[in-house]
Length: 392
Image 1 (cartoon, rainbow, N blue to C red):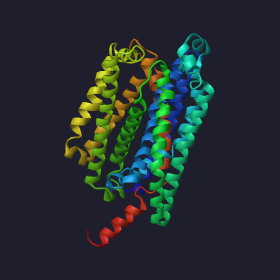
Image 2: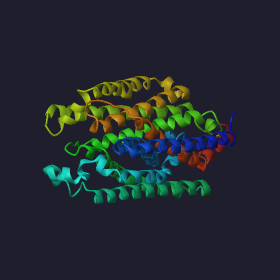
Image 3: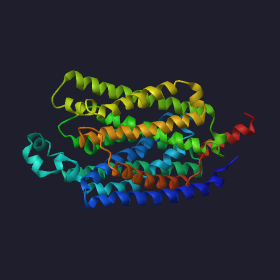
Image 4: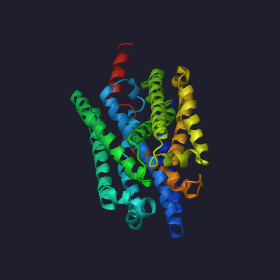
């Protein structure tokens, strides 16, 4: 059987390949700055919103496991921690968006603000200076939470001090509240304000669920690749993967519930400030993508994840996770791009190269961080050794 040490050269090779791919893809995307800078920033925003969701969702799941415990976190804990340690890279990758604010957001264009009373009313909040301050606050919160969660996890591995587990639990409760607040405001700032006349009170919650579902799907895919290698193969049982699959099913159902609730309430009220957001997404050719999301973001994974045999077989669960990753990318595309292309999807080459570039660089950073810690937490390894000694 393969071991963690034996597959690390392959991981390091993949890390270098992803880094090279990321640089090349972003370089190709940047060539559009000379003749179509607006399209570059639109594609870059779309790619960024998708990829930042994985470390954010992983951090939420990590804090949730600190609060609840349980075997479901054993297969994904180290993967989640590695995801959260990529926030510095994502903070750097956000910088190009500061240069494209007027090309993305109506509230960043003075001539449109001057002609729109509603934008003037929202100007104390929707302005470039306050936007920049909020971005700094978001990343300060995320980086701080990730730092302490990873630092105490490492100390727990080194010392085995049970008090550290209590410390991680104490920070995770307030941390989840901060996560909810920052993700809600970030989703408003980065996506909802693309169409500043529209608003939804559960928009932030939808993004939180999408992030957790995307992060869980990603960690399942990584787990599928590592599940047959030691020490993960001995440390994780099929029932652990079943628990992970059950949680993924819960996120799928939550996404469907919140998305339908938002649609139903807005459609039923038929308010002129709210209904156009859905009209541009369901009555044009965007409606085809909406139906694809209904079928493959809810119906198909929901039916598949009802079967215990699929959740216990890592090969099948990994395929479900990979499918959800692709569909989540389409979901983010459906949320972002109709703000610019109301008549229907118009796929530009940078809609492919920008997400690939951002994603490849993020994956390179993730693989680098994944190799920095043992795959199995010390506490779990010790419990397994004791169980083996007693013949359990």
